[in-house]
Image (cartoon, rainbow, N blue to C red; front, side, top):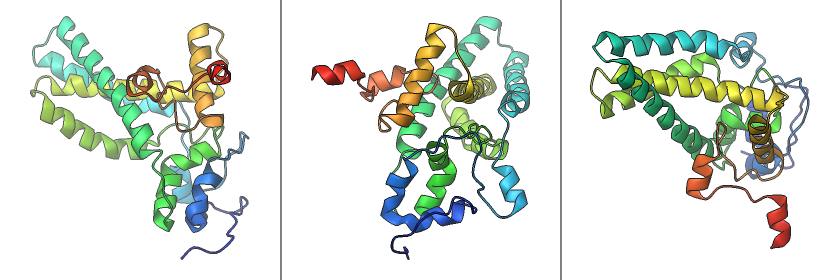
Length: 237
């Protein structure tokens, strides 16, 4: 049951509060609070600990898995050109997965108690507190769980000797994505490409939140028609 005129107390653990917002959750979660200090999620210290991840944990934990996976395909007899193609294919698959998850799962509209609660944990917290540096990358425990269906998917569409390198490429794509995502929020790019990518992503957070779902590139936004209009283009209309 949704409490009427419910207000979230930002000084208390948030996760089990946001569900009470009901239909008002969508408006609330897309009104960002810009500060480097993140909110508390849980009263329980263990669960709170699991929600916080330093960005460098992603490459430290997952790059060894990437290299091991690729080495499995090498040991099965594949040469460098084939391995490179498999890894590139895995990265390419990840870019589509990145876009698809962000658009259709992370931005799903919810209004039920548990729908709001799960959405907040999954992605809503990032839109509400976009500069929370300890909740920008995916927690390793959650990534490990998601690796299982991803491995099975890759296994389903490839032959046994290709599966490890293709999986490794996809996982490498994920590492690149999470590190890029952190940099876009907290880095200060000096060259045009990362500067434009940062502007593109922050535009998704602060101006047009239902467009611009690509993080590492805008390619799939262009393909599927979710490329946000520039301010100049809007003025010309």
